[in-house]
Image 1 (cartoon, rainbow, N blue to C red):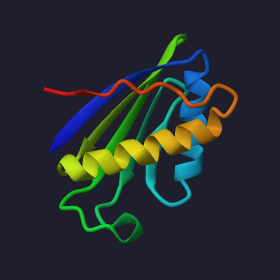
Image 2 (tube, rainbow, N blue to C red):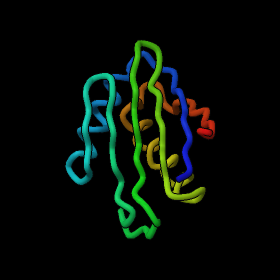
Image 3 (cartoon, rainbow, N blue to C red):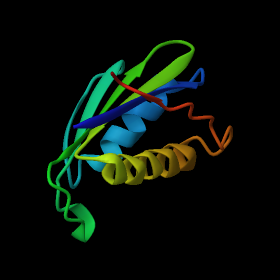
Image 4 (cartoon, rainbow, N blue to C red):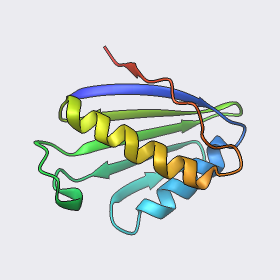
Length: 106
């Protein structure tokens, strides 16, 4: 697994977390509360052929939305970063584009 985390500054982290999770729960395995959510993207989502599922975890507080992605490899991780950023910016259109300062998880 290859992982990265970003802390996205926003006062609306809980709102965005819930919107994203509700959006994805129609097609993906999702669990969430106002402060924490997880979304599992299957390895064959949208015709991709990754070796493992990707797990995206969200944690919201009053000042930020923390996003962690666990993916099967570097290419998968980069693809998932784009998926998350595009979707989050769509829901956060009033303050988009949001800054994602990705860091590897060691």
